[in-house]
Amino acid sequence: MAVRILSVLGCPDETELSVSIVGDRTIRIINRDYLAKDRPTNVISFSLQEGDFGGVNPHALGDVIISADTAAREAEEGGLTFFERLSFLLMHGILHLCGYDHERSGEAEAVRMEQKEQQLFRILKKEGLLNPAGS
Image (tube, rainbow, N blue to C red; front, side, top):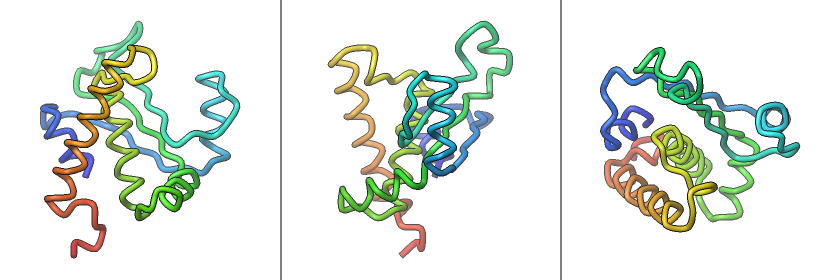
C-alpha cells in the first residue's frame, strides 16, 4: 500500500519510509515529547528531509507513526473498516512527508491536501488495495 501511495505521488522507487503502528499510550508519549501535545493522536509524521540534516539521505522520506487504538475508534465512528482507516492514516502521514500541510499553511493548502487524499483513496479503492483479503 505505501509503495503504491508513494508511486502515485511521484516519489522515486528508491524512496525509503518507516511505518510504525503503536497504541495510544506510545503515541501519546511521542506526541508529548516531540510535539508538546500531551494526548494521543491518530498519526504523526517526522520528515527526514527537513531541518539541519535534511537531505543527508535523499531517499529517506521519513517516519509515519499510527495509533491502532485511535484508528479503531475512528473507523467505528466513521463507518469504515479498521483497514480502510489505517490505510487513510498511512496516506495522510505520507502526504505530510511529501510537503502537504493542512495545519499551518492555511485553508487553501488544507483543501489541496483533502483533495489529494480523496484522489488517492479512490485510486486505492479502485485497485482493490483497501481490502486486506483482496476480495
